Length: 283
Image (cartoon, rainbow, N blue to C red; front, side, top):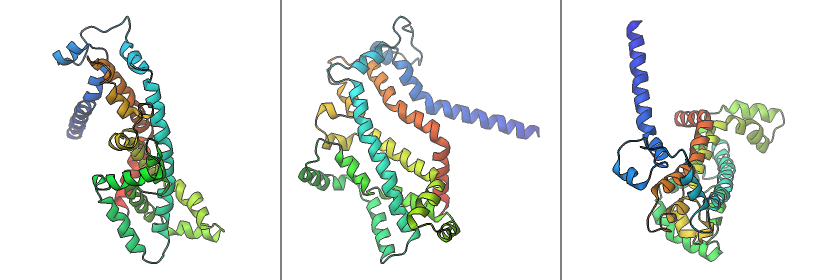
């Protein structure tokens, strides 16, 4: 009994130490917002030598207002406009495609599933030029359509595969019972399967939200107006607008940029962990 208690204390101590190591960069970023450049680069202390009690949020105000007529509130809004429809359309379209692969039989089903999986292995760098030419022909450059429209057509094989794995783990007897009660194929999906698929849907939505929110490379290619820049590019150009970069301002805006991701993960972590665990075990 005593040995088990000691093992428990040791396990907790290791977990606490690991947690502190993992969260250290975020804490360093938080306290760096209250320091000046000389202290950020000249001291290894995580806490500021002198806390600016007279104006503690000066870096946040300066960064939020921006050095030009375009502030961080514009970058925030642009990111929301680009991210929210992309996430919603991804969940809806990938759920429909996954339902088809998991529950229906049609000619060459295995072949199409293999083709879909093969696109998962395709490096993004290979398709950059064809996609740019296509979106240029369609007149979608300098808009968010290159991100939103592909989400409407389930162009994310990773999420389809993940949802197919989850649906395959749901007993078919549920479908049969619903069918005997008069449910159509659409009714089975919306009334029976989707409520059960909530953890997998949260996982897919959270992944897509994180990837789109932090999108940098594709935005740099397709969007060329500063007023349409999302947070990632806004954060980058904030370092170009002044000859002497105020790193506490950059850290403050960087912290505000990742804050929605951290909050969403903490509020939805139960579904996220459950979704990852179940989609990994069932097949």
